[in-house]
Amino acid sequence: MSDGQQMTRRQMLVAGALTGAAVASSTLWAPKASAAAAPAIFYSPHQDDDALGLAGSILEHKAAGRPVYLVLVTKGENGDLATLMNGDPCPLTTWGASSHPCAAGGHHNLSWPTDGTSMIVPGRTAEFMASAKNLGVDKIINFNLSDAAYGAPDVYNAFVNKVKAKVKALAQQYPGASHKFTAGWLEVTDTHKAISDAAYLLMKEGVLTDVRFNYVYAYDKPVSQRASGAAYVLNIPSNHMTIKRNSIYCYNTWDPSRNFYALGYHSVPDKLESAHADPREFVFTIPSGYRTGQITQPMTSW
Image (cartoon, rainbow, N blue to C red):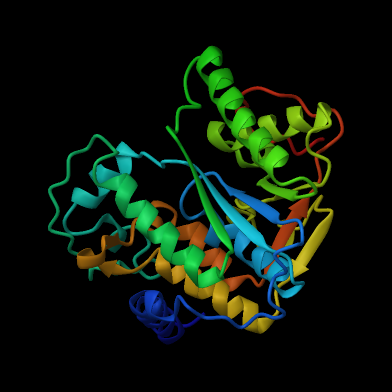
């Protein structure tokens, strides 16, 4: 790609970031979801996972006329992100600046506490709510769990059990629902893997029967390798891809008056760039021989 093309790409992403919230009411899908139909419930481990790797699948279900519920599993606390946002000029101006624009223009002028909660959680959640509105989901559910899967095994297992209890309650509340998680065994973060573990355990107990897993970190891989092992590759229609990109822009909008600080984009710029460029999502089923517990590398041999 030429330098001129890269500049156009940067300008387009920043322009999209500024207008993402303005188009948040887009409704390009049909037919209207039937209230009597069992919902498809999507689980986003953190704010930004929805736009990154679930949005096309959400829109596919909307187009089929199914109610779609979107669950935010964790609060998304992140002290490192708070520290990054206090950096001025923005670190994204020096990290591969040709690819990663800062919606603030490179200068934040922030002095946030670095507890990772007080400014980060409401800011990230504002972005999530804008993205969910853009996608037209029928219900937003916030588990409001502390992102506490990291550390000793007992801490990890306690988090798994909290997620399991909440998902089980939803399954009982909405019998016949399908449940869509992320492929945590491939994504090598304790939170994502713990949520997959909760789903797996509920499948073993017969509580969940219709379950799929979107590989939301596939966009870290080369384009040719992203679909490897997938049970289904969703080729996102162009009108749905427009909506998905608008959800991505919700995570790269700078408007402090509405609590938008482009936190999603500062957190995972490479992933969002790749997802913006690739009109596909990658759906997996649970692998045979699945093992619960923390992992240190993707379990691609399963």
